[in-house]
Structure formats: C-alpha cells, structure tokens
Image (cartoon, rainbow, N blue to C red; front, side, top):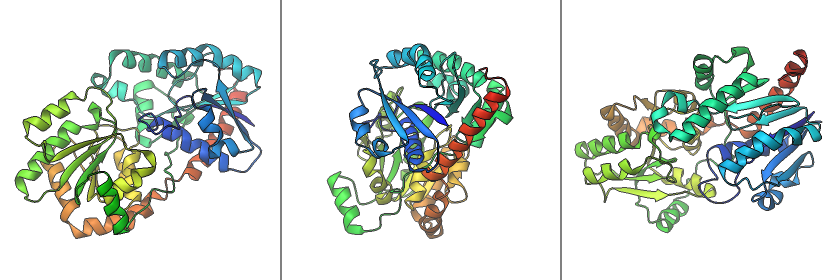
Length: 392
C-alpha cells in the first residue's frame, strides 16, 4: 500500500516550532520508519526542512521517501494554498492509495482514501481563546474535513466524544489513537547530572514546573493564583518555573505575577529545547499542568515517564493521560489546585507512586504502538474507500 503523509508542520529546528503537532508528526513518522512490511510512504516536507530531514533517521528508511514541496510553505497562507490547490494533483500523479492529513485539515477533491487526525476542538469549546482568523479557518476546514474523511483519528476518547457531539462525526469512522512519546523520556536520577543542569540554566535546587505553550487554555492565570495561595499558606514553597514559548493572549500572565508581587518567585524560562526536556522534568520537584482543555495532554505523560510527581486537571482528555498516577483537580478551583501542589511536594506516598508507577504507566504510550495503530487505520481507510466506490 502506498501511503502519503503531509508533514509540512514538522520542524527539525530547535525552536518553538518543534513542539505540539510537529512532535506528533515526527514521532509517527519515526514509528512508521521502524516498521517492517510491504507498505511504503511518501512524506511531503517543507523545502526549508528537507536538508535536516534527509540526515535524520527518517531519511535512512528504505520504505519512506521524503519529498520537498516546491512552494514556499513556511508561512501559513502559502502552506494552506499548497495543501488546498496543489496537493491533490501530487497525490494523483504518485498513485497514492491513502493520504493522511495529521493536522486537522484535508485538501479537497482527493483521488484516494483519506485519514485526518483531529487533535482537539478547542476552537469550538473555547472560541474566545483564539484569534478570529484562526478560529474561522479551523471551524470551516475541520468541519469539512471530518465530513469527507474515510477514517478519522482522534487522539483521545475525549476528542472522539467532541467529534460526535460538536461535528456529528459517525462514531464508526473514528479510531482513537493516543500519541506516543520518545524513549528518552525516563527518570534521570543522577544527582550530579541534575545539579549541573540546574546550574547551567540558573534554576533553584527545588522548583515546581509548568511546560507548555503560553496561551489562555493552559490556565496559567489560574496556576499563578493557586501558587500565590500556596505561598501564603506554606513557608518554604519552592520557586515556580513556567517554561515554554509565547503563544497568544499571554500578557495577563505577567500582569498577574506583578499583581501578586511574585516577580522573585516565578521564572519564565522561555522555549525549552526538545533534547533537554527529560532533564527539566526530572530535576523538578513536581510538574503542574492545570489546563482547561486538551486534545490529549502529552506533557502529563512525559512528566510521569520521568517519574515526576504530577498535578493536572480532571477535565477533557487529561484523566486519560494522567491515569491513576497523577493528582487530578478542578482547574477552576484554586484552593484545590494549591492543595494538590502541596501534596505533590510533601506527600511521600504521592511522590513514591509517581517515581515507581509513573514510568510504568507511560509505557503504554509508545511510538511503536502509535505507528502500528495508524497502519491499521490506513488499511481500514482504503477498504472503506473501495466499499463506497472510491468517492470522497
């Protein structure tokens, strides 16, 4: 079977672009590249990324061909134009059996079976958290793509429920496939290594960590309020480090820090390089991810894989990522969030459970498992496409 995958959003650079959906696509490609079998893959990559892609593990896979796109697709308008106008002909000329759009949107007039991955429907659940242009684009194109796809991949049961409820997607067309995490997310216990890392990044010996894009639905304003309450109630509360690139609508965070006079207690660390993330998790006293809504919440799994005590929300997909190991609270209840952070810092049973059960729980979210499940979905898409006479 000939599978084509749109990997325009993959970035091999050490920048904020190498996160989120980019990481999901790269991990999927890495898993598919390791698989044996008769399927072969055409992967469309931005021409700005092709040199780095060619020397990666993906470029060495015999059954995976990386194809640079001739259009300048580094900016969203040009990328969208290529996907909607030029991609269908590229699929036709290469005699593709099934096309996978791993970032919510399919092109029109496809000459083959199709799979679309929907990561979340935050633009419908929380439209106020998005810029108007992005909200309108997602609402129009995602709805259309879900209606035309041969198969739909939802990254969690929560996302599947949203697809059925908000977009009337047929349940029988949806496959839930959890995102995988790389093997290097594991506990780092060598104290000398951790101390050297903290020194290199000017981090305190003890700190609470948030890691993710700075945007409204991550509930960082709520985290700062809860952290202020935690410091009021408990002396010796560790520093809070908020790591991640700036997204949008983040200015209130800094205003809230000043309002609570926490400038000396909270550090905004900025973008964190991918290869250092296991060190950030492992050297933290606890990880806090109180998001209001997530398609899956992969940072929760990554933190647990590193054995780090974790606090997260009890809403949307986050209980699926957290399982029985992380502490889960109402993200809008700042007292509950403050109490859970204190538990993660001081409760020996909570900390022992994270250290022993966290890595075990995270093993179910492997890249190879993710890749095998996608391969099955591709085959189902081709069968389904043939059953309806090769239309849509």
